[in-house]
Length: 369
Image (cartoon, rainbow, N blue to C red):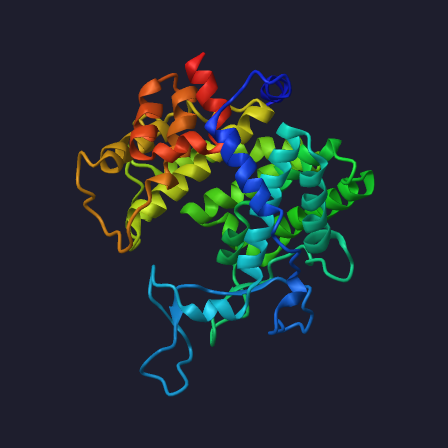
């Protein structure tokens, strides 16, 4: 990253990913500040500072007069979730902040850092508008519960948040007090994830929910200066996630049960790849973890490749169209980690726009050098 920034500053590097980052960052400048207290519906606690959301795949029971309790229809999103905007708004904040922080880091323009700071302060730091560091009321099911462990999947991109805070360290707008406040918020959220009932439920999840729980705990732990926690999470992920989730032929059975099986197989694999990257920070090699019968991350990717390229027809359910952009960044990373350019070639063929994705740029350059 530092080498890339130096080349950009010296005018030595021109790349479509940088052009796209500039466009995306300029768009992100238009993102208004959002707050968890903006919602019109209050959680059971009565405190709008509490994050709240509704379970997306749960619907009124047509056989009950009042529709309660709700019943599950996997993969079919109930539009009622739009009644509570916390999930969508937090995603917007993290996405815009990450883009702005990258633009600040690479281009050195304070405008980007200043707006990223404003977005973060409003959602996470200012007492009047900040979110309490928990997900007690995430993915509530009407007639069943007021929140549940599976709701933790809604913060699966928290690693982008901590990356953004790191990229903003040189900004005049992002003060030492901001950094301290962000670290304190993340430390409390990490503690809640590890100690709460919802957190313990998600930690025990055997599918993609468990993988992304690990991603969140490891990234938060690294950010708040607790590398031992991160190391422990990634060390156990081999037996706890890879060995349990992936068959010797690369299939992911728990994801194949879903109505969007290709999408969920890709999503879980992306989580395992993120764990692999996090492991590099604490001396753990998840890339080459392999069970005696051949279960490993690369095998899971190789299983999916012919379906992504269209060489074979997907034999499981996929009730919505699969977007190859979901897997192209994983392929780009795989080209570097497994020293096999074929993965990058597949990524570009399946999704030409991958060349414009800034998070892929460092890996593309490693392959080409």
